[in-house]
Length: 499
Image (cartoon, rainbow, N blue to C red; front, top):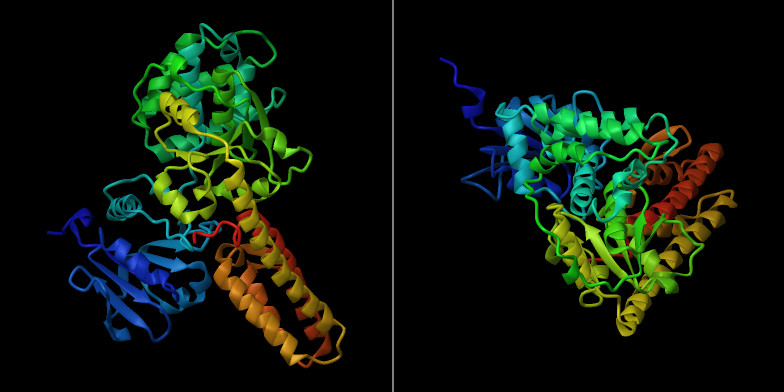
C-alpha cells in the first residue's frame, strides 16, 4: 500500500554559494525533514532536525530525487550541473524578482540584505509541495492590490455614502483604483486582475460574481452621473473582507486628529493610491500623486503633509528628505514597525514621524494611526539631512572616482594594472554595499544579465591583448557604472542603511 504524498517526509535542496544557503536550510527545517545544501562542486552539507547546524557529506550521499529545489539565480549553472530530479523547482535572487521561466516557480521575496522569508511562507510551500493545497504559495505570487483596494474603498463608501455623495460616483472609484475616466480597456484590465488575485487569495468562487458586478458597474458608468448602488457595494464587501478576516467597525470621526493639510502618494502602487484617496475623502484634505523624479515642487511647503508609500517605495524617501520634505511618513507594510525601523535607519529619526499600516486594512485603524503621526522636528530633520548628505557625497565620490579611472584607461593603448585594480576593488565593495542593485538584471548591448555579471565579464575582457575586445570591455564597464548610478538612486542603497 502506497503512503499518501502528504504523509511522507519532505526533502529539499538549496543550491547557493553564499551564506543564504544556511538561512534557507534553517527556515525550511520547520516543515521539511531534511535539507541538502550544494555550495560548490565540492561543498555538500546535510541539515536535519537532529543536525540543525549541518554536517559535511560526500557527493555520493546526496539523494537523486527530492520534493523541492531552491536555487539562487546566480548559481543556475551549478544547479543544472547537479542533475537532480525534483517535483518542484523554486528560484530566488537578492531583490526577489526572478524572471518567469517555464517549469520554475519564482520566490518573490527579497533574500538579501534582508532575508524576508517567513515561517508562514515555508508552511505554504510545504502544503503545496505535499499536495495538501492546490493554490500557489503566496511567496510565488505578486502582492495582492486590487482586492485590498476594493475592500478599503467599499468600507469608506459604506461609512460615508449618506454624507459625502462623491463616493457614490464611478469617478471616485476609478480615482481610487488609479484609473482614468476615458480608458475603454479598463474593464478588461480590472477583470483580468480580479481573476488573478481571486485565484491567489483562494477566496470562495461563488462570491466572485458580486465583486465582478461591482467592477462592471464602476467602469460602465463613466460618462453619466449614475450612482453606484449601495446594494452592489454591500454584496461585494463581505466577499472582499473575508480573505482579510475583517469585521465592520464604526469610525468615530470626532476622535480623529486633523493635523495635516494634504496627503501625498507615490505613483506605481495601487494600494498607495487607494489609501491616499480614502484619507483625502474622509479628512477633506487635498491630495497629490508624485513620482520618484519629481522636481517641480517646493517640498518645504509640505511640512504639514503625510506621504503614503509601500515598503518597496521607501527607496525614494532619502531623496524626498534631501529635497526638504519634513512631513510625516506612513509605510504600507505587513512588517511590524519595530522590525521595519531596524531594517531602515531613516525611519528612526523623529519620534512619531514614521509608522506603518499593516495588512489588516481596517478603516478605523488607518485613521487612528494617521492621527498619531507628526512632522519631523527641525532639529531631527537637520540631523537626518546631514547624515543623508554625507552618504550621498561619499557615494558620488566613489562613483566619480571609478568613472574617471575608466575614462583614463579608455584613452590608453595598453592596460594600466593599477587603475584596473582600483576599479576591481571598488566593484567588489559595491557588490557588498549594494547587493540589490548589483543583482538586478540589466541589458548592455545584446546581453541581459545581472549587473554584477556585466562587471565580471568586463573585468575579465579588459586585460585581453586584443585592442578591439579590450575597448568593448571598457565600454561595457562604463555603461555598467551608469546603470549602477540609476539603480542606486532607485534602490536607496548606501542611503537607507540599517546601522
